[in-house]
Image 1 (cartoon, rainbow, N blue to C red):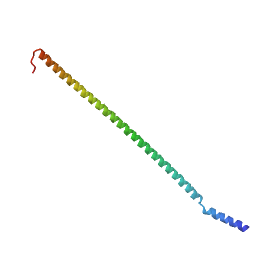
Image 2: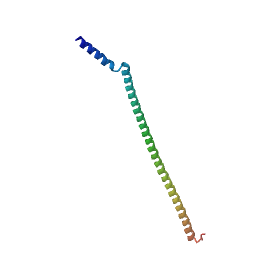
Image 3: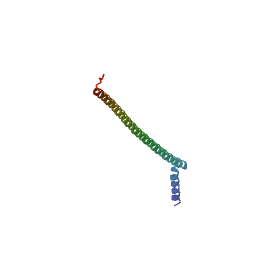
Image 4: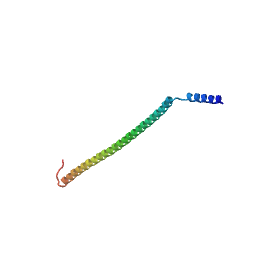
Length: 111
């Protein structure tokens, strides 16, 4: 029986001595912690890049909307200017025609 206990004790010591040492266990825990920290840093960087891309897309959309508004305003101003010029030209022609008619009615000759 003593031999059996001695054999079991030796087997237990061999089993324990074959496992990782405290230093190896600490190194494995540190490796796992470093791996988790690296994964979290990568996820944070990806989130920041996605937020930056979203902000750039929003700024581009806003700039495009402003450009369209500016273009519409320019077209409206140009149309208003052309309409005003056409109105003035028509008024001048009407005034000239009225002057000619008045001159003809008065018996004056027109050049």
